[in-house]
Length: 587
Ligand code: F6R
Image 1 (tube, rainbow, N blue to C red):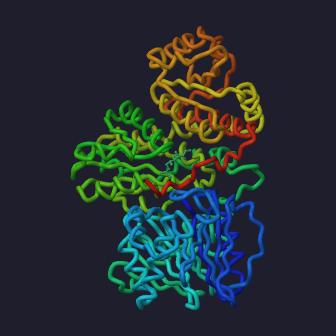
Image 2: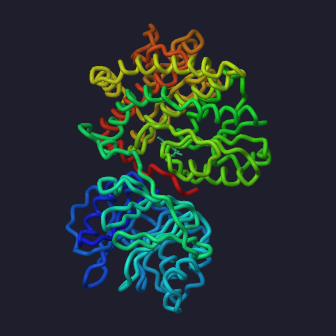
Image 3: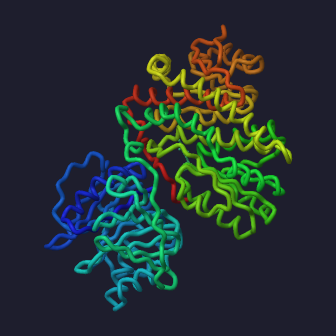
């Protein structure tokens, strides 16, 4: 949440470069934006509410600039609350939460605050520390010690060279260009200029000026050395190409991502499974859609390898932490690898001696670096807020892990290959769905239900979590009230919500679920079946080819396309749903 970006170079275009880089971080927050440029005549700040993608400005010349695209946490969406914040000689942008800001603010009675943000409190504290005589590095170290919570900051000081940045919990990456240096919350901001990076870790500080970067330990102030890494992301992967939105592009990317999942490294899966086998209790922790992928895996492990795993929303895991010890395997699944609720559980679990296993799509994310064993999801950059290709790639990888987990001493490869064969046929089958003809068929169904305000989804077994995931997808991009249920549960309450014409998605066509669909239909529901074959009970049918355990993946494809078209038909931008952000780095 919130994207921050800075440029310092030997040229004079830092402001415009920050503007174009921030547009690539817009998925992290799109309430408001702001940029500060150090010009020959002083610092010039431009900021406003609204989306950074809609900003077309020629910023004044200057060799350094910092910027921010906001997802509001403290204070409403107003121009005054947007970053950067300027106090005295300090210009600052911030990603994260200063949890104890109210206590610090209460002590700053002499300051006339211009905003309701926690960020302005950091700027005031920093300005005071510098005025009281601390050098910039010491001032940043002094002030960041006071901050409780996860954050990253970028700081420019009037009349002083370079830009400073500090990290405690929220991502920051330094991009090393030719005579220019970038610092960003995520790589796409500067990927057109460089793919050479240094990852800042927690409790680290960096000073960058033109082409140089000097790193320090935030606690001791001592200089540290950071490894330079060349990232393999391609610029084109982060672009929409000919698609109208990232969401539909990423849905179609699944042609390749599922096929690619077959190539996951044997050794990494073996390490993962070895840790599961040597544990005495497995907890899978994740949020939102990633949590639904874990719920699908709960069925995989139960049915394929006979293992009971406990799937808990990361935000609820604190109530079960007494069961985490040095025999526990904590499995985190996360697209971004930065989700604050997940990170906190892992950090505490690590202290209790638990083995940390992680699957993340962003390979160098905080969660990936914390893990004892990391399996990269390998879906490529996912920019739309609604997760699609990362979700199916997570499910594919978890399926392979469940098959690998079913192995005994000598048949690891054989078991893993069973999983691979299922994914091979799933990849072939979904390829038949990802074409314009099928898309227009799904769109026609969307047109029939778009005017409804309520929609229900039922599934059984591994398709029950897919019903929950379908609800998330539909809610977040179309704002239709959608709810998923285990099919057998509807008659224990939810059926009271059914009225004549209420659309219900029925995932599957086996005898049990058809019995539940019949109960809905007799109360007037409009039944949209998502299954390999049509059924006389279905008012509409969306084909999801039979893929054995790959059915969870195959069923998600029509659900994702349907959600996308419901959003489009309602005149909404599915890439930027209201109130949401791609990477949830606050609790
Ligand atoms: C919904 C969605 C979210 C994320 C959740 C966790 O489409 O994408 O529910 O799944 O915020 O994010 P990650 O996977 O980055 O930990």
